[in-house]
Image (cartoon, rainbow, N blue to C red; front, side, top):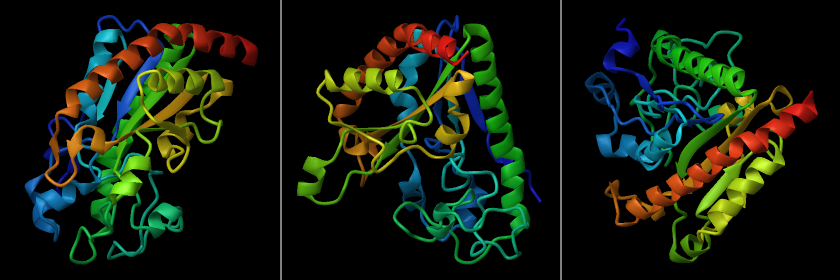
Length: 295
C-alpha cells in the first residue's frame, strides 16, 4: 500500500524565525489544502465539499508571527484526510472494513460524531467515502503523517522550554459562523480555549483576551471550543508548558460558500500579528514567574 506521506511534499513545515527569540510556538494543524488525486478519487465528495472541514487560510493569517521571533508549524495535508487534533487511536469502527485494534478509542464523542483521527464525515455531516475503507490505510496515515507531525511538535516545544525555561503553544483554528443573521450577529469573533483553566495559566489567557478586546473583537472562553487533543495533551502548566487554543470566526475573513478570502482578511491578519507581537514580547515575563512558582 502506498505510503501516505508520499502524496505530500512535505507533509508539514516548521517556519523558523531568525532568531527564535520568544518562548512561544504557533501551530496550525487544520489549514492543509493539498488534496491528493488518490484521496479525491476515493471520496464520494467533490473537492469543494471536502474543504468544508478545512481551517482555510489560517496559516496565512498567522504568517506574521515568524517575523516576531516565534516558530510556526503548519500541516499541509487536509483535516478531512487525517485530524491531528485527536488521539492517535480515535478510530471509527463504522469507517473501516476491519475491526480497529483493541487499544483504539472507538467510543469518544468525536468518534461518535464521525470526526475521529481518520474522519468519516466532513464538518457538515456529509460522508467522505461511499463505503468503508481498509483499516491498514487508516493506520498508515497515523504512522506516516500523524506520528511524525506530533514528534516534531513535541521536539520543538521541548527545545523551546530548554532554551527559555518555559514554553507556550498557541494552537490556531477557525470556526464556522452560525447560520442565520440573528445568530451570526451574536456570534463570538474569537473563542479562546484553555480546557477550562487546565492547559495554561490564567495570566496568559487574560492577556490574550484583553489584547483582542481592545481591538474591538467579541471574545469568549471555552464555549463552544475549549481546546482539543493538542491543547489538552501539550498543556501542562506544572511542567512549565502552556497551551492556548484560538478559534477565529470565518466570517471575519472569508466567504464560507466560495471559500475565498474577503476584504476583511488583511485587517484580521494585521490584528493577529499585533496581538502576537504583544504576546511574544510579554511571554517571558508571563511565563517565568509561573515556572518559578511551580518550582
